[in-house]
Structure formats: C-alpha cells, structure tokens
Image (cartoon, rainbow, N blue to C red):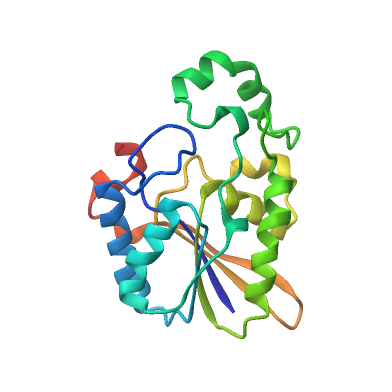
Length: 208
C-alpha cells in the first residue's frame, strides 16, 4: 500500500495555525498537485478538517474523483497560546521556549498545546483505518507537524528530533510511505517531493 502524506497548499495568512482559506498561490499549488496525482491511481482521499486542508483536497479531487473522507485527528499540532500570533511576536514573547525546543533534546509541548507524541497517537487512528481499508494508493492531505510526527513515530526516530525532517516542508509536497502488510511496517519511499512546483518558483516557501 502507498500512502502519500501531503502538506496542504499555502494559506492566506502567515499567523500561527489560523483556520483560514488557501491563498491564490495555494490553489495553484493544489492544481499542480492534482495534475500530478492524476497518474498515481489514487483510490482513497483523506484530509484534516481544517479549511486549508479540505480546500486542497477538494481541488485535488477534481483530478482523482474519490470519496473525500475528513478526519479531525489529522489536524495540525496544537500550538496552544502561540496560535494566531506572528513569528515576530512568538520570538519576542516565547523566545526561551523556542530556544529550548530547537535543542532537540525533549519532545516538549507547545505552551498550552501538544507535543509530537500527542499528534502521533491521534493521527495513528486514521493511519490504522487506512491500513485496513483495502485501498492501494491513498492521498492524505494534512499538515507539517502531523507529517513530521508521523515520520518520527513510524520510523522509530526520537520524537524530539522530528524537526530534523526538513528545514521547511513545502506546501503540496509529497511524502510517500509504503506499508508492508506482511511485516506490518512502514517504509519511507520519498520525502518532501515538490517537483511539480519547481517550474514556478513563486510557489516555493523560500519565496513567500
């Protein structure tokens, strides 16, 4: 079974984890993603319930035409009291927390929010559902914190090191897992693949 973990398209706000629609660039990213996935024989489509993920899935579904299953446990990691704040505000008021987090020594939760282990535990509810679905190629539109936490948990990496999975996960990038039913294990086949975006540099995060 192939499971394609996909980060949602670019949202129309740079504030921390606000539940908003896609930006115009995010819609373009989702269109390019959908065109690419149209050749992947996708037979299952899941997304989180947050607007940016559901809108990405809806655009992709114009190309793959599958039942769109929404699962709340695929939502982004809770940033607690940091949510809705700008990067500048977070650095000014929570700089000590960020410095401690970036030591990558502990899987510390966001103030008033979740840690990676919390996210892994809840997201695995849907991953286990997918494993039992009988499908072969499943697209999962979710969030950067979820993808990093799932990879750390499924690959046996210390959860405190989850942020080592890319400096930045590109919006609408593809991370492919292969689930081996015989050995009941996951393999990481590809990571943060955004080849479908490279011909339009304005769609890449370094240019946002």
